[in-house]
Length: 44
Image 1 (cartoon, rainbow, N blue to C red):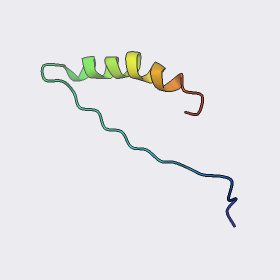
Image 2: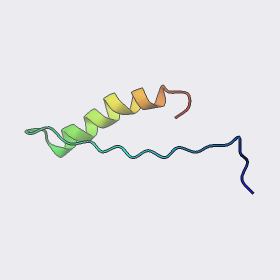
Image 3: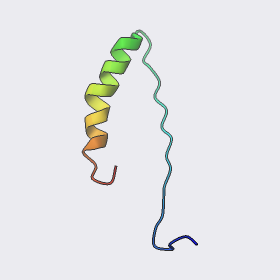
Image 4: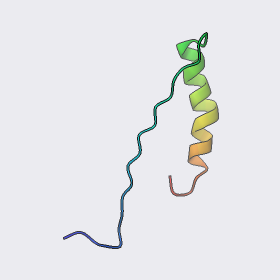
């Protein structure tokens, strides 16, 4: 039986690369800008 005080939220986020941005630039931007923002959230 599940614990009623425990809840799980699933989230799917899609990112679209800007026109003119290479795949490597996109990966670098995601890793260097977005990842630190996400990891700064205590619940993440």
